[in-house]
Length: 361
Image (cartoon, rainbow, N blue to C red; front, side, top):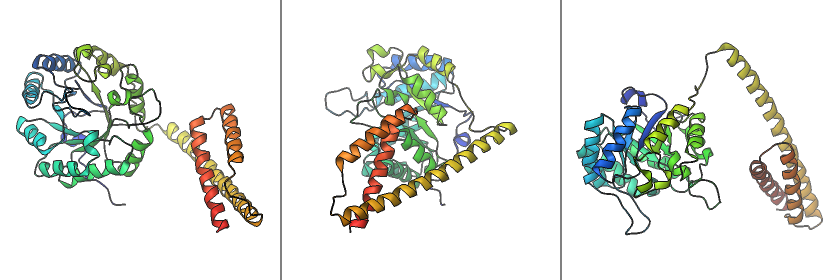
């Protein structure tokens, strides 16, 4: 299968790159003192951490803090001069790109609000042609995998091969403990379609608060994500944007120390043998599961034919509600997730309805 993206591995362009790749710094550049104080504290943890800061901040409504603008790029240059750290910031239009290139910013990223607009992404891609700067693309605000892939493709087709995705969660109407729903399945599907693409998790924007950041950071690494982007501020309590989700450098250091970095694989022969045995068990169970699903659909077809013969409607709401509640109760006793079983049975029910509709027609 043809690769979706032409990607240069991170280790080929980032000297001393190791996993997890760490990116940290304030949500917004606010002053030269704030930038240098934060950067020096982060550098003391590990000078291989990439320093991030928002220079231009897109806001839903006017009159909110929209970033310091171009002066912040000069502060970024000072950070690099005094700490040696690479620098990264967000760009949303061609003038941002041009200013960042002139200022010597090392890495650019495209934010969630920009990713949703193919015209904006294409304009940025056009401005990047002929450059060799790494570009990271955040997922769009809403869970649209094609938009995310499309933005990555546009940047890639501009000749940028030093490319990565940033998973920062998705807007959700449901009540969750997170600012943005992680929807890990979206990142998994992207990884499946583009296995060579580095994916960096942004726990700060997923969580919206500092309490959950350690949990999401560890989960991201356990999902084999390439790195973490964590907002870090020398004095989060007085931050001009997203104060609740920014760690102090001390908290960042503690987080990094506690993270467990697991390997993608093991060369241990005993491990490989046992894993293969367990995977074979999964294969056997999946074959049985497919057989059961086929049998269930055959019964659904018979029910459809019987309903047709007796002029009875396909949808029986009371029966469906009763069946679903019973299955959810059984699932709970078996230790299965209610949300998983509900989603599964909704899909099974939809397919049963489709089968019966075919019979009716």
